[in-house]
Length: 198
Image (cartoon, rainbow, N blue to C red; front, side, top):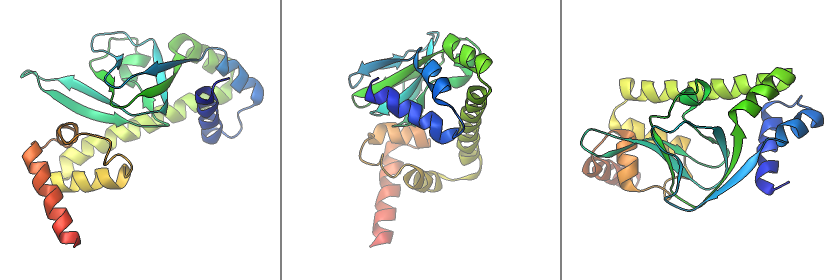
């Protein structure tokens, strides 16, 4: 068993403490690991996603390309998170997003069919799947509400609070599109916050 697979199975156990060794062993049988370099794609747009990816090491971003050809980042995916367009994955539809490595990344692949078989075979694993889906839903809801009820500075401060370890790992360009502001505006926001902290 690789360290990455062990890390994934540990994450399953932490979310579902009642999971048994038998259940984890069954889950392990369908797993594989992808080692990707920086700038490599885990998923490309219009591609059917065969597996959901658990990020053991590294950092990725999910983005789409708008009508002007600009890359709009919608999500950063760090260690212990899932690299997936989850709605497309569970509905077996092509992804509308690219998921690309920012850093060299090690990703545990959980194939769709194996995941469904695990849910059918073990109630605990079915519960685990539901909990993961709930986390995805909470993330999406928070993101929608941030654009509805927060200004750019509040979104930036929330990003810093939620992802304190990503500050030096993502580019200003990617972060500005994630926050929905121009790069120059983000630079001004950061300068203002820095000056206020002195």
